[in-house]
Length: 197
Image (cartoon, rainbow, N blue to C red; front, side):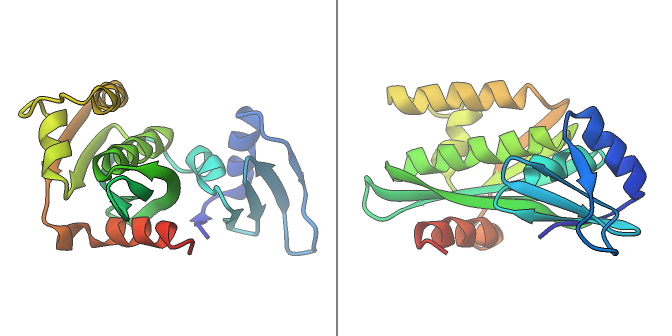
């Protein structure tokens, strides 16, 4: 549940400018509340608390855009192909800004890895970062995206094109292969999603 410390009247204006309807609070302590997609924002004196299944629907509007972030991604599947899920997180100097994971049906491990990377890049774009440093433990995906390996599978080639289109959203980006232990939180998120947690 993200908590954003801010001037709540400025936050209200940002939401209204983005076309989000803002209503009165439900209690004496709530200044206002607003809903968008699967998220509800509740304003108190000096903070906004975001609840729901999709907090980034509102959080991306309220956080300051720009700046640099580290993005981690991982895919998981049981069988190859088999039930699959994604996991990703965005980290800045303030800590974890956002994280997510979801089941994606039946897929190969490589398809799940690409889907996780795509979800992570979409989230980073929504948050408005200028510079991202992307890290994943799939050497194949990293090297395919960087052009060091060919992508012979047509479906993976299409996903690689999507990744490149998303990367053009950023002024600067890097993509690096890291050991699994460096990517453990993204791995946890993917496995939690796969297990339905």
